[in-house]
Image (cartoon, rainbow over all chains, first blue to last red; front, side, top):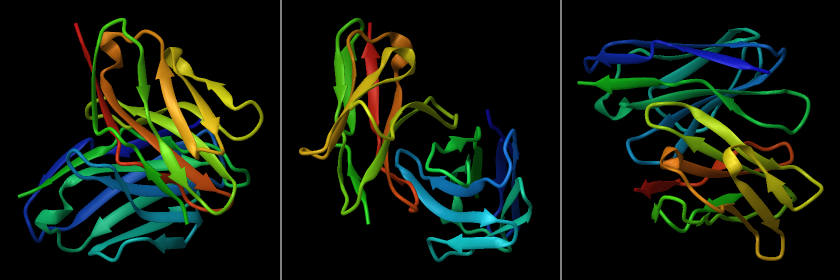
Length: 113
Length: 112
């Protein structure tokens, strides 16, 4: 089964600072990878997804970006954080060839002050 | 495109009582349906899924759900809840070749 790692677990950053969140996946190859954001007390908002190395699709226009430098690595970045970027960021992975389940990492709690 | 409605944002229930968390979806194509649970400050954990076959699906922790195509529903049930079931529950739908769409979540609070 898959294991998804995310770090850091928590992060407090000032407005205007850069961001880099990392997600790595074990136990599968060629997964589809996803970044979600969950605001306090709300559901999941899909931010980016990737079906392969270097292939990124954005669902929501914002000051965030994503990259996939390796098959099982997915990075979420920002050049300048906004207060509205605060939230709980979740990485998810699913097998690429068949309809199946998304497996989630433990999440990163980001607070922008 | 698909959408998911979870009619109850919060459900309080006493320990050992039965519970049903409601989920309805809309889609113009065949769908695959999922229930996830999220404990505080953790990621989502899969409870159960419907991909095909029997419409009654059994999952972990004693939960089950029934896919009703005519009512476009996928309600989650448990006959007797425990304090440890207190969490946020998310219903999700996916069409073939499309991304997951998650509902807004239902907060289940189990009271002693």
